[in-house]
Length: 389
Ligand code: BT5
Image (cartoon, rainbow, N blue to C red; front, side, top):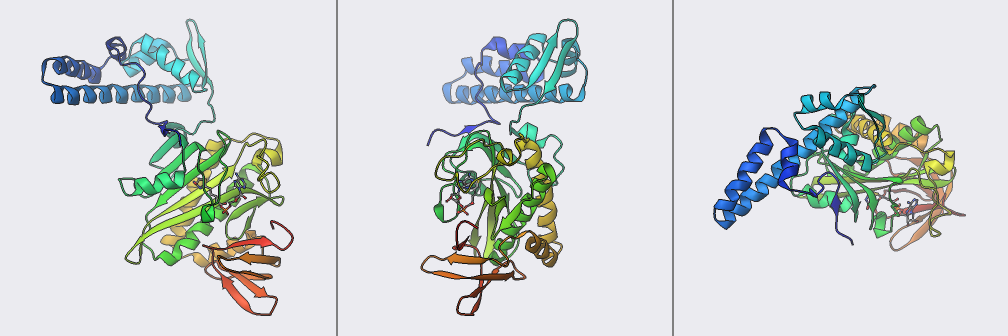
């Protein structure tokens, strides 16, 4: 696996004093003073002071970049370099450098002599700043760990759950190198065209409730896809999202328990958004929003609506005791009911007709022998008798 790149925390490429002074302001003065002191004191202290200085410079740069973006977004017309310089207390050349950095990230910014800068368009990048811009949630996605590339966002969420990540933290990547499905199956997560994300949850509920948390994501994603694309997205039990017979989204919910209580849940969501073609191994079963409509969709808008709706349903479930209405909604979206299916378990396989969904989200199967059994998710997969559905 290649090294993990955290896009919210890029390494400063240039730490030269000239770059430091160009940012101006009080924090930079402290940084310079620290570097001067570091050269005259003994080495461990020197090192500490050096790294503190680097950190302060980095933070300052990030703040300037974020504030500049906010200013550009708030102004529909040109905004002069002087006005930005006065407002952010940085030099004109520092602004020019930040503008160039933003352009390299894909922001289209027009620069005109005597007029200043104007933001023309924002790229579909999934940085912390872009995702938080306009996100109206209380805690879901309020803390974001965004990566250019990572093994698996589920794995990262699990790793960080034990080291400070909070309830509702979002882990998201432009590309996954080892994206996973259930039973360790591979999940293809191509660069820049999909939503590959995991929501970390710390609910105070029994482990048996995990399946319902997973079902909630299915309902939410179906609704958001319908809303933003007009497509008729449906759920294949337990929570594949299907459009015109093909899979557009998969969900992997995992949990860690301690003494019969949930320590945390990781709700992993993979959506094929702007994928134009799939590798041979999944081309017969996979689709994307682009392939279904011929249109490119904003990943940012999809993610934001998913986070808002997820919080709404999660609260209904955890605090509102509204499982019955949630399951009713799930039933209305589930395409398995009434169909002949094959249920594949770890050690056996059975065939029968889906006759319903229980009050807690299990699939009710009437076998060929007439026996009625309830199947819960976890270690089973379900497919149609003659194919995927
Ligand atoms: C799933 O498993 O559908 C769950 C997928 C969850 C992916 C997310 S992405 C963010 C987070 N981080 C992770 O590492 N995972 C989660 P399952 O029901 O077991 O389906 C897996 C099967 O789907 C594979 O065996 C393929 O047949 C098929 N598949 C793989 N990649 C696909 C894709 N991009 N689109 C559609 N189908 C795919």
